Image 1 (cartoon, one colour):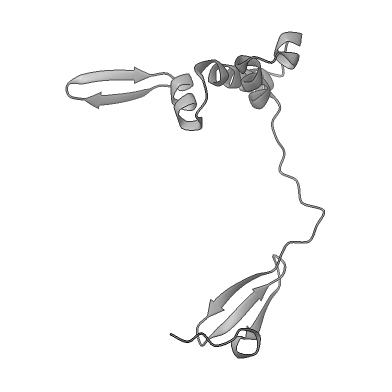
Image 2 (tube, one colour):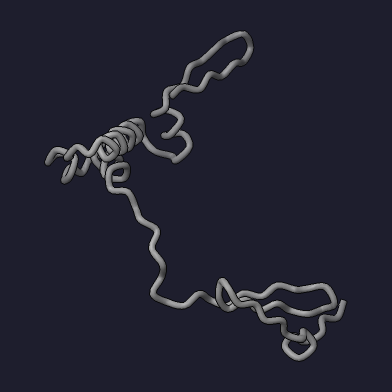
Length: 113
């Protein structure tokens, strides 16, 4: 995948590695490793010993691309969040599915302007 930049009559083609490195503040070696790691994972290939245990920037990028992180639910309950509703009421959301409205006058002191 390439991106083309035009400016002042010049056309500059940026590689996927260069765009990824610029976006994430990585070196080109780390970005190249990341792309190779993604490719290995998608194709079901086993990485070399070097890619699995190497400590250079290429290997760090490779492992970041190869070992895909899974988003898992936290074992802890979600924290409560509040928002102000019209009429000066607060909405308390203690979980994703339940919302409880609380009278703002009893829970939050009046703010003088």
